[in-house]
Amino acid sequence: MAYDKIDYELPGIGVVEVFIDQEKSSEGYRQALKNQLSIRLAVLSYLHLLVDHPVSVRVHGVHKNITLPSMPAFFVHRLVTTKFGEYRRGPYRDAGRFRKDFKQAALVAKRILTDKELKKQLSKLTLKLPDDLRQKMAEGAEMAGD
Image (cartoon, rainbow, N blue to C red; front, side, top):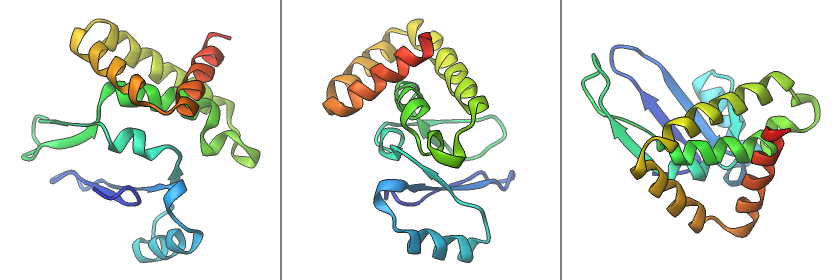
């Protein structure tokens, strides 16, 4: 799976989201994709955290499995991007998004804490993270406690 473009198509629902990895795409590429698809792109920091740890689920009424980020990956991504994501700087700074991100992280954390397998997955994931991402995750968690 390529990191610079991921399409989610839900048959019968018709929703398609395109995510662009900020670190792996150029402004020219993003503009070309925007023009081709006639959509507003959302650049997503640290996309690899989500893409590298997928799970497949069945949803009632949808005939194919849907691939999503694992709960541990989503949790780590929320903690990292809440403080260090692209919309935390400059004109994109939005306090409402901070609260939403922390709320999502808290809800996912509650679920992870009740499931031994998810706890193991979170432990394995954090052990594999580079030191800089582990530090960013810790700073995001600290920020949540403030």
